[in-house]
Image 1 (cartoon, rainbow, N blue to C red):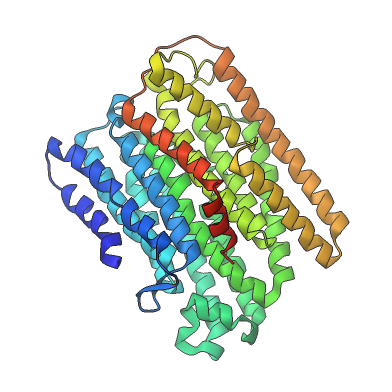
Image 2: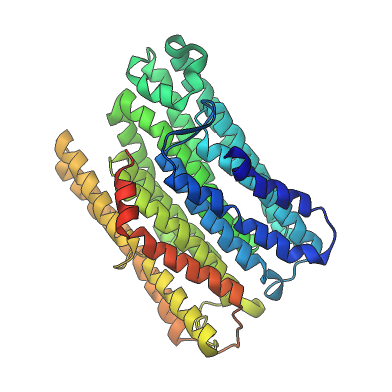
Amino acid sequence: MVELLLLPAVIIFVLSFIKSEKTHKPLAFISFLILLPSAELLSIKKPLHLLGDYLVVDDMGAYILLLSSIVGVGVALALMTLGKHVEVSKNAYRRFYRFFAIFWVGLIFSILSNHIGIYWIGLELATLSTVYMIKTNHSNVAHKEAWNYMIVGAIAISLILFGIILIYASAKPVLGEDAMNFHLLLSHAKEIRSPFLFEIGFAVVSIGMFIKMGFFPMNLWLANIERASFYPVAALFSGILESAVMIGFFRFSKIAMEVNYDHLFTFVFVYTILTIFIVSFLIFRTKDFMRLFSLSGVEHMALIALFWVSGGTFAALLHFGAHAFLKPALFLSTGVLESNGKYKMAGALKGYQGEKGALFWFLVSLFLLAVVSLPPSPMFFSEIYGFGAMISVAKHGDHLLAMMGAILILLILLSIIFYKFVEVYQSMKYEGEVYPKKVYASELFALVMFAIALIGLLSSPVIDYLKGIS
């Protein structure tokens, strides 16, 4: 199974060195093959040991890997027509796939890793490869942001490594060399003799992960690089790279819950609400598609983290899946909305003709309204379950009034974001001049695939599967 997971990436990497225009379609087709083994893992009995105790497939890992592979297929479809929206050389196109292959290998290791060290290596591999994908756009702004990302990414990954060292040191007296094993750490968490050292390590790891997702205090760097990159790169960041980061937070926080739940909840609660507070006003002031969608992604990642530590596992994973499909769909749509260098929001949903055009603006409208949690969006249901989990935690901890106040503040901040998105939608639909825009079959197929995947999240088998993840 490991070979099947890695084989598409290996083939893509080799083909990317062939300097021929004939590799254009084979590269895209082989990218679709990443979906097959990921889908098979979902149905196999778990836990499945792929590489001893180092790579282990559990229910959560299989779910997140499948989400990522679907996004990867959507990105491959959008890449087929990227050159019709922006200037991209054949060499840059092949280089993108070359580093996408490396990125996918790193992603597999980080998502399926049962070893803290291997998780960090996989995350670092995915991070470094995205630096070169940003530079696929041969512009001074993109090259500058690639260097900025290298610096911020180095800070974040260094913090994660330092935190891992502290966590290992806290558990080594109990587990010895097995203190790097996620499952053993979780089962022996209450036996850790230096809980303070573990909590410091967890806080440092979490801050590193939060920085990589654009949380406080570095809220703008992610929006800057996604604006400077091509649209498929932004989709990779929002739909796949953040998956590798967030699953690490899930695994570390499950251990931290066993060590001291109150400390964990207070730390994440304060951090995420502060992030949402700042991001909501940044969203309110933004006048650019890419920045709007990027900052909205930060808000959703903060909500997912908050729901998770509140005990709302189902809410967090459902919200996670909806975000993994909605945000890449919106980023890829931006490639059409901003065709011909027209970066204005006003009138962006005008100028489409024929059945393809009508389907495109309908889908984009659907995604815009779904991302602000209007029913029947999966995010509407995940937020209800998530806020319910927060109230349940407060009832058990005698902090009901304080939690109700915090939820009220959150709802006010989310209302600001909701207002901005509705305003943007109205401007796109009813204002501005009409510019002719063309939608291509491959990118439209990608959006249809994301829409079907969103609907699938609300199906009974998926809901039962998510509720079964503890």
